[in-house]
Length: 93
Image (cartoon, rainbow, N blue to C red; front, side, top):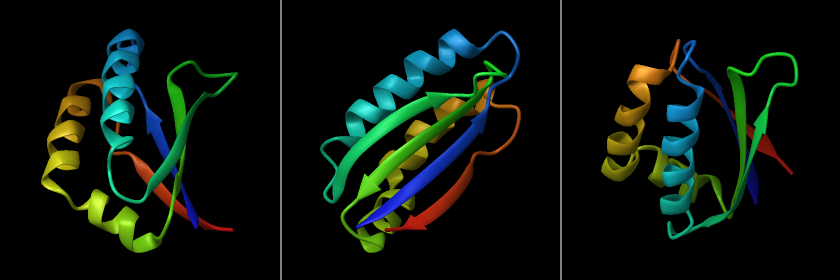
């Protein structure tokens, strides 16, 4: 089992849009093989700094999702609301 920490910085004024898109994306991830769970966090000192901590069965499951066409399409919705590309960190248990 692995954890994936995804860090995102949202452009000013785009938090509501981000929240809607992120919720939709997380809902679609629940049916992806190997996905176990996901939790969203907000930096207490910066409303535009967000984290998503996901649990995956294996790193192979995560890599398959990371490079999938479906995820690429969903990430394209984030382009207008992010200040910079998301940062992904893999964590071992």
